[in-house]
Every structure is written in C-alpha cells, then in structure tokens.
Image (tube, rainbow, N blue to C red; front, top):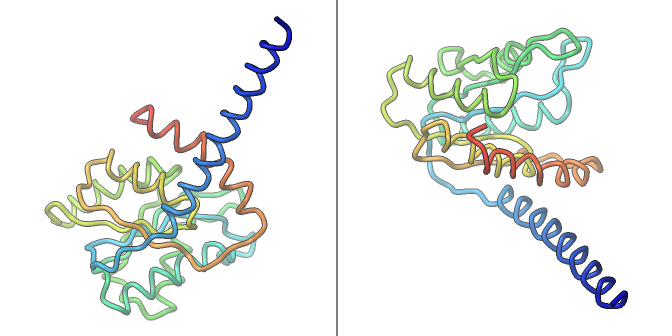
Length: 194
C-alpha cells in the first residue's frame, strides 16, 4: 500500500512540474512570436521609472520597440499606459516625454495614467480608442516577451478583436522569475474576467 501511495504522489508531483514547465515554455514562445501586420494602436505597458524620473532599461526597451514600429509605419498611434509608481512618477507621462524626445509626434501619442495593472491598461485602451473615434481598432501590445500572452488575453477580454504583440529587445536574469510568475498570473486572467 505504501509503495502505491508513494508512486501516486511521485506521478502527481511529476505531472504538476511538467505542466508548469510546459506553461512556461508556451508563455515564452507566445511572447516571442510577432506578426508583421500594421495596427492602429501600439499599446506600451508601463514599468519602473527611476527616482530621478528616467525610465528603467526595461521600459526604454519597450518604448524603443514602439518607436521602431511607428517609424516602420506599423502603427498609427502609440498608447502609453501606466500609473504613479512607488518612486513618485507617472509612468505614462514619463513614457510620453521619452517618445517626444525620440521625435514621435505628440498628436500620435495617447496617454493613460490609470493603467495600474495589465487589465486596467486593456480596458483603458478600449475606452481611449473609442474616444478618438477608432472603430474596431487593431492593437499591438508592447512589453517584455513573458508578459505578452497575458496582455493579448486581457485585450481580447476588453473587447478588441484584432490583437497582436511585439516584444521589447531586452532580457535579464530576472526574466526566469518573471516567466514563473506569469504562470499563475495568466491562469488568473484566463479563469476570471479579471
């Protein structure tokens, strides 16, 4: 009896670990796949702003990817979405300022300062696109690759029908932790309409 219980426990644990590893792999692959189709809005998700008001390297990479998309005529607008972080800066305002410095026309930058979470950013993107008169707009999420599967899901749940993504060209050691963290985060977004 003990042997069969032990075997069931080992099989159960092995299956659980296997599911987690498969989920991590699917999240990573899903974030690294890009479609080369133009969109109406490139939605840049916020990230840390330093105490001195400059964007973190992760955030710069997201913004640079959006600038590249705009210059390649892959988007009409760039929507920056964030909130006031613990450092005391409005991420969206900092992002908009960075884009202007990169010569993106101010009238092509949309600002959402109430993007506290990925879900809020998705909902706010829908509201903002309605406000500027876009009918059934296409949107492309711009973030780190591990974040994009959840971003696309949130955007679809918020009502966008044409959703794609583009990953920031920046990696670091903490990406492994972020990938693991994304498994329960994605599951939460998948199971609940936030």
